[in-house]
Amino acid sequence: MNSLRAAKMFFVNRTPDERQSLGSSGYGDKGEGNYPSDISETSGDSLEAGFVKPGKVKKPGLGRRFTEYARGRKTFFVDWSSAQPRSVWAIITSAVLGTVVILVLTALLIYFNIHLRRQIPRNDIQRIVASWGAPGSPTQAEAHYPTDFSRDITPIPCHSHNDYWRKVPLYDALAAGCTGVEADVWLTDDDLLVGHSAGSLTSARSLTSLYINPLISILAHQNPPLTFQNTTTAIPESNSTPSSASINGVFETNPATSLTLLIDVKTNGTATLPVVLQQLEPLRSRGYLTYFNGTAVIPGPITVVGSGNTPFDLLTSNTTYRDVFFDAPLDQLWGETAPANASLYTSDNSYYASVDFAAAVGKPWHGSLEPQQVDTILGQAGAAAARGLRARYWNTPAWPVGVRDHVWDVLEKEGVGMLNVDDLESASRRNWGG
Image (cartoon, rainbow, N blue to C red):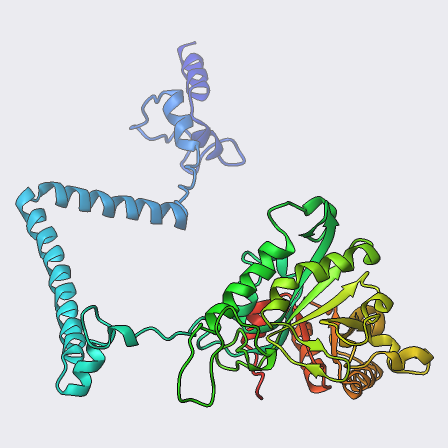
């Protein structure tokens, strides 16, 4: 009885490894009953834990390792910097600032040394140059050039389209060298107001305030009221009425250049033209206007051109004197469809010959003008020049800039007399003499 109980307890309490190690006969490799004497009872929890396969430890990624490295470096720097006495940081900061100050002072010393050495007169000529125009010097009265209003400005054949849109009408165009400006006028309460549309009109912006009065002031400045004795040329007094051909224009570099004032009439032409002629009287009485005397055109500092609703018949009704010229239709001067009355437009009654570029020539669809378009420009510009007129195309492409410049190049090459521009700065930078 005791033997059977012992055997039962043996097999029940054996571990899985011990059971698995038994042979096919149910016994282990050792002989029957030959069991190790050192077998001890082991808890089930410890045995089961021994059978669990340990999981693989996942290593941190590259980003995490870099972050931990940077964090460790920062901690190292913070620990190092906090361990330094404040005097060390003060010394380092002072050294850096001192080095910067020394470099700046050295650079200033070198610059002013060179600059001042150039300014120190070493002979009489340099002393005169250094003291030129200084108060109390012998050259004080000689420093001002009487007609220096447009000094260093080269006049160029460009027309300031919609000039009244400029920040400073008239003066912006003159500063760029443009020899033509444009004013859209509307007859309102017996006055000519300037603007692109009726909604943009104000009583402060009139033809007189924006153009006529400034031009009088400019030309008075360019023609000082002095008379010299024993000379063959006399500058007229301000109260005289000189010949317009003897008066300096607005450009000092070329006093004979006439400035074109294009007046685009937006209201009824029959009612508006007499008011235009009336408001031009201050320029007319001073001899500033180009005019036709019945046989020839006498050039003056200002040439007025009527456009828009300006009536051609009313403008040319005076056959002995007129100082407003017509803006002829350029597309009617050349081609198979040119009307028979195209010969009416001559230099005696007209000055410009203008047309919408897109309507007369077409758009440069492929970034450049086609040969037939260039032929049209050549024919129209040539027909205008043959009549003594200056061809002008408005509504030319403004963008892209490359297309605009291409069209400008073609117009100049084919003999267009006046380039209609909106971008004054780009026009002024062109090589007009090339």
